[in-house]
Image 1 (tube, rainbow, N blue to C red):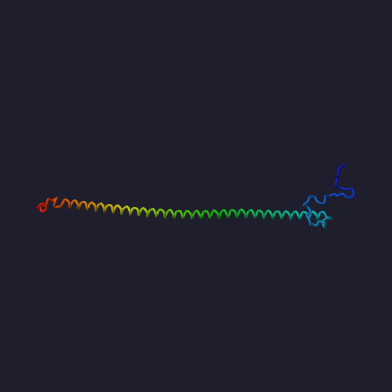
Image 2 (image 1 turned 30 degrees about the horizontal axis):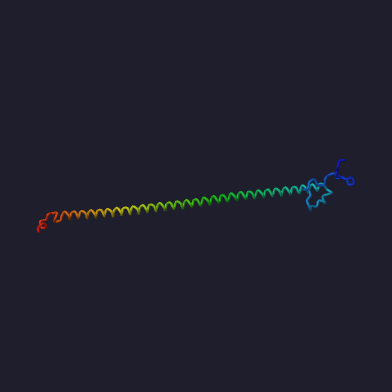
Length: 157
């Protein structure tokens, strides 16, 4: 024998009262529409339209949030790129300044070394000239001495 949900002592239902579980919500009063199925359909349609509009609003809100996040990320990336560019530009300027100062310092050092070398050459030249003059004087004195000239006054005793 086939098992049925209808009982013989109760009148059978022609149309199921609720097709799915989401047609009636807890706390919802559908008793005023129980006697007019057309009004029940209108209420259902209105509820479905309200749900659809709420879903559309939610989707729009989600889209706005995602768009805001994308714009925020793009803005942050642009700010980071600008900051990085500014840092690199400042670093380049500082490196150029340091390079210029090093070059200037090297030029000054080369000039100082040239001056020292020239002073040393001049001192050595002066010392050689002085030595040469002293040697010349000594040779002259030796050559012009009374013994070397055979001065008769020095040979008489």
